[in-house]
Each structure stands twice: as structure tokens, then as C-alpha cells.
Image (cartoon, rainbow, N blue to C red; front, side):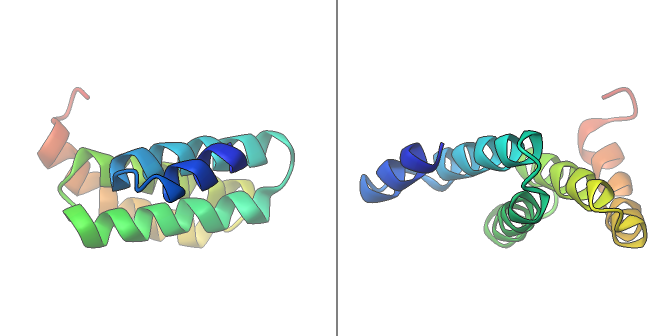
Length: 99
């Protein structure tokens, strides 16, 4: 995924594509135990998505969930709780209660 991310950046890939590759890379880092590196990527993807498409976008909500999961893996429970308290009402409104 590191090589794919570098290639996509060189080719001028869309933000959506870059987000997907970065999320895959971060997930792989988590599996490998490289949690701090994964956390940074999850945080950056969430922040950029929030800035680019806003909090009401499904992509941002997914990024927030990934970021919160990474925070919990690092045992940063209060930060994860705070993020989810902000995100869950938006997710319910945008995606619906049954999503």
C-alpha cells in the first residue's frame, strides 16, 4: 500500500482514491502492530475529509469511525469518546437510525 500510495500521488489521483489507499495502509499498519503510524494516517484522513467534504458526508463519517477505532486501540478512550459524541448524532441524521 505504501508503493500504491506513492504511485497514486504521482499520477494525481483523486482525494477519494487517496483516502481509500491511505485507509488500507493504516489498516495494514494496525494489523502489523504499527498503531502510532496507523493513528496518524486515520487522523489525517478524517481531518482532510472533514475539511474537503464536511461532516455530513458518508466518507467523513467512515473516516471518523476509523479514527475513533484507532484511538481506542491506543487506549485513548476519552478522545475516542469525544469524537464519537460529536459524530454519532451526525451519522444518525445523515445515514438514518438503522444504518
